[in-house]
Amino acid sequence: MRTLALGSQTSRPGRTDNSASFAAPTAQRHAVAKIDAASSIYNGVTLAAYEDAFTMTVADGFGGTAQLTVVVPIYAINSPPVITGFGGLACAFWACTVGTMTVSDPDGDDIPNSNVTPGTGAGRTVATGSVTVWGSGVTTISWDAGGFFGTTPTANTFTVYDGHWTVTSGVVNVGDSAKFWANWADDSGDRTTGN
Image (cartoon, rainbow, N blue to C red; front, side, top):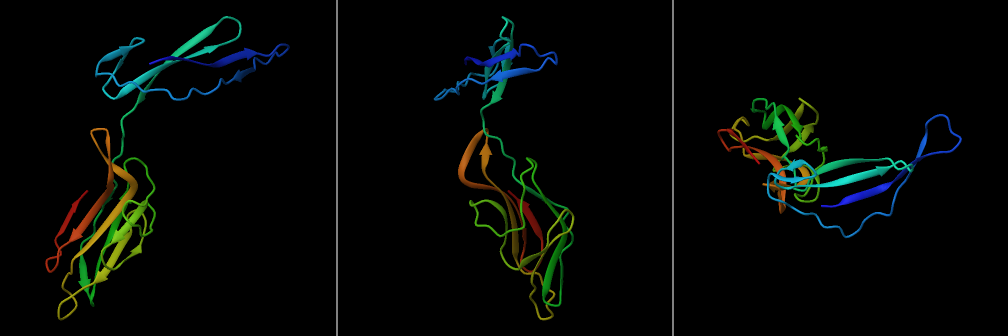
């Protein structure tokens, strides 16, 4: 943990509008983050596990200074995307359809309506069939039905990705894409979900 002098703020001579200028210093390089145990204290600020802190000092050029201690989380944060609002599975005329879904992400990550290879970015995959409508409360997927009359559900999986890796207890699991999936079983059409 260190104190950073971020530069000086000085009033300009002859100005009556109280405007000021700010001179930024050269950026620090090769700094090291220090992880302390939970409940450690820095400059009177109690830190949780996986937090660090630094102090900014601003000088006005006339001997006055102000300090601020900034607490920074240094652990990874990512919540997987979600699919909500599933409509019922309807299979008729050799097509199965599920609609009224909403695809969203608790972290605010944008999930576009584009087919992706897992681990290459945000988007979605459908094991079979296609996404026919995309949007909040209206996302719909369709795929081929089976059976003699074309009314029997066939298996399908719809998966959405937020473009990031999963995180467990602040640690990034490289290679494990953050996702949410919904699966419909063959014959019964029973839906299971997970991430």
